[in-house]
Length: 126
Image 1: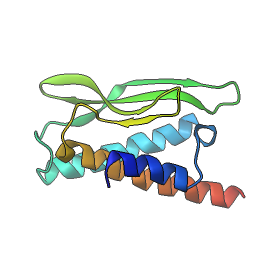
Image 2: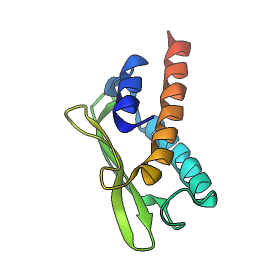
Image 3: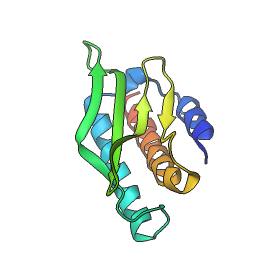
């Protein structure tokens, strides 16, 4: 799946920023860590030092606790805090725009797993 298909999948599952809380972002970070570590171990990323930034998550929430915007970052031995996934204020979801497909795929895979998780959570509430 590519970035555009991942964005479409989010919409097809009926999700919006109004469904995302800080706890949901934490779940996404955990899944991103899992997928990046697996890709590093399998040597499918361009370098074996990629890891999610634990120090940097830039997010804003509405007064009801739902997401306005969020920026998650990734690090390596030769850079710090490059954008991994962004939930922009205009509802555009960005995926590692600086990276090639080998570095992008683990993040998209984590996002898709997270979308499925979020969709299941919404179904349980309904």
